[in-house]
Length: 313
Ligand SMILES: [Zn+2]
Image 1: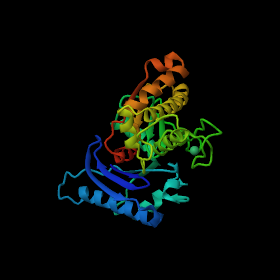
Image 2: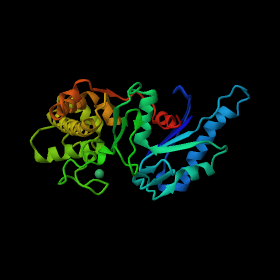
Image 3: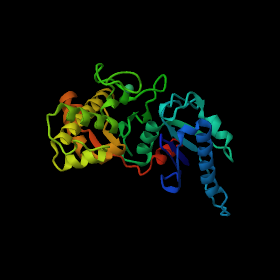
Image 4: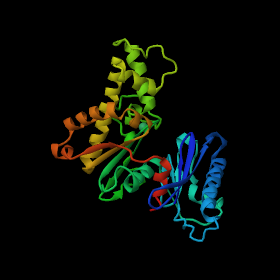
């Protein structure tokens, strides 16, 4: 299987065995400003090189290509193969499957879905959610991505927008989100949300903090400061964790999962700081029976391309 994960800054592609083993990888900058056509052409070239690495070999027992899976941000209609409003890439509506196929050296089955749904499938097949038919995946990075599995199936919804927990407004009077609503979970539970909160806390002047005057501030610095006891950094991470708990409450109360998987750069780097707070918030908000057997664990995937590849299955 070939998996291609298209992000705002990089495209990660991998050739993955049907057992989830990464056999070869490709990585390139997205360079989204060059336009959809160039980005898609680059994706096709990456796929062709990975296909070539298997099929060109003189080895007669060369494996069969099962298909290509593509994870991409935006509104994705997996049935029609279209992507709409991929805001981070600056794309309008595009039939990605048709466009990619045009550039491929061989005919192959192509599956597309959102990057978050691709990761959710990846966790189910090869990651932390193996053996779990009911689980929630939350990716905390430059945004808040999510996917939900119920009774062994990925929840997609009537217009392919189910389980998009990042854009549930937790405060209709809150910060304006890039989606146009106010107070979405993603305005707080993600890297940029965390950094904005630090700025707000500093402006209020309630804490003295070593983060004061640091420019540009990174999430890594905030996490390090929190681990070294910086009160402001701890308070901000607690607030993010509390909001993460509210997001979990929504998914847990509707779907009764056995597992929540946390991924994303910030989610993994600050797992031990965010998750205990989130769990205690969740415990206050859902029935004990929903909380009692629920585990919250970090992602078990090494590469986002594995999730994309697993869509082929
Ligand atoms: Zn939003």
